[in-house]
Image (cartoon, rainbow, N blue to C red; front, side, top):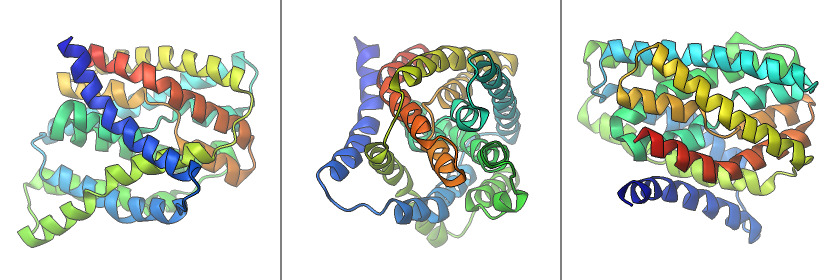
Amino acid sequence: MNLVLTVFEIVTPVFLLGALGFFWVRLGFEYRIEFVTRLSMTFAIPCLIFVSLMQSDITPEDLSTVLFASIAGYAFLTIASYVVVKVLRLETRSFLLPLILGNTGNLGLPLAYFAFGDQGLGYALVIFAVSGIYGFTFGVWVVSGGGSLLNVIKEPLVGATVIGALFLWQGWETPLVLTRTLDLIGQMGIPLMLITLGVAVARLRPANLGLALWLSVLRVILWVGIAWGTAHLFGLSSVAFGVLVLQLSTPMAVTSYMLAEKYGADSERVAGLVVVSTVLAIISLPITLAFLI
């Protein structure tokens, strides 16, 4: 009973904030998702990443281990996704990226924080940064036929991760007034991302939900297994282990739909994958957390 209550306390705030965004749009209220997303990704999340890394108790050695484990994890997920796409004879441009990329930002960050505290958030931010870089390079290349390294360099979250890691490594601290300002800005990040996720799901127009359901179930089973094996392979500590498994097994990212829409892939099918996998996460994530905490 205590375990069930603990998992319930972790996942409930996440899904309630997502539901807030979902019903806000369904009730006809305005929500400028492009503005909020830009505000989050340009200011709030980079500030959250920087302050969290700078103030983290994580050792540079543990941080580097999680970094390499997450890179390896995404390599394994890419191979598995490619095999699934080819075996099922699906279109690579439309299906490969959604299978690889999970919602490590909107869902992964708050879940890691609520389940594992500040240390878990620090690890989750590293994995989130790896996911973002991968999505804007390899992901764009898959969907459009060409990615740009310049786009990655221009992403504020990349710079925040590098600078935050440098401050952590050197033991530096910004002046207190600046730290409090950055921390206050960063506190906007997680609530905004969760509400925006609900808004995005409410606005999606999914197609072919039968295929989406089977792919989502298959993905949950395979991805948890791959993440678990990767965490064992790198000998991660209990908190890092839990965060890696949690982040790599999050439902398909809304970013995949946005890229499909932008570059002319089958965006309606991708929308179906995002919606179904997100709904399925209401069941799969609490079960996964029950084995991790």
